[in-house]
Length: 324
Image 1 (spheres, rainbow, N blue to C red):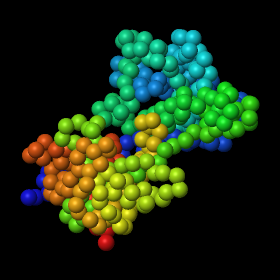
Image 2: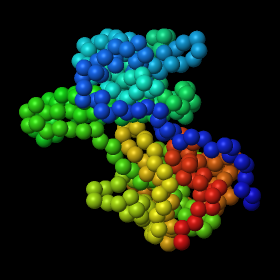
Image 3: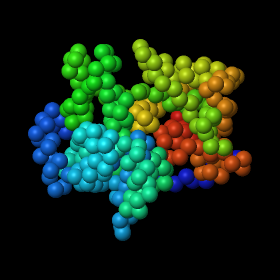
């Protein structure tokens, strides 16, 4: 079997290569942030939970609003007026401020019926290529940040209400003085390889025919390498040795950092944890190449190129990664 169809130029990894200067030094100056918001070149993304609000224009979909217009959308409901005060400062794009404005669920539902707007989830925006790639990273930043705020309005130490400060990069508790910072959950995502074969699995949530890398959250007190070995062994019963870092990817669903690796498989007999996986099996390199090109005779496919799993798998197919 040949390596199959050429999958074409390597696409950019989704939600990466941000052109935003996060300008962390500006976050603590509320007056300076207010000036930046009033500048005519300032723009804001409007996000409600999983959904992003886009303007429909003659030139296509546009995710950028003036901050005033974004606040106006949020202020259309009583709940929206309350949360619209929490406009998050994402940073500077070529010197112009970028913000993220949260919307409540009722407002999102109302805007879905308004032909001036398109309301689309961020995953679909990336997979369907609805926006220029330069918007994906700041949208991921804004979505993850606003999601954290929605879940941390009360202090985990004393249960008092917390206050939005530092341009959205901290919440303070006036009662016990605890400071709370946005969190990112690290996830190990990995491809176990053994010579000309690799181990792929199927989640219960996958679409029919799709196979991907195994993945799992890194636990407290655990290295990346140990998490890779543990997850592969727990989910598929395969022991692994050497682990090699590949790349990382922000994954704002809701707020993870995917840490991609290749791992050296030391055993071959698979024992599947059916609570975690629907299936797992070994694939030959040539077969995986067909999956990347979506020409597998059984209709099997690899993940979409927006996901790091695609890039981990493709690197092994094309670069012949060996771990010995």
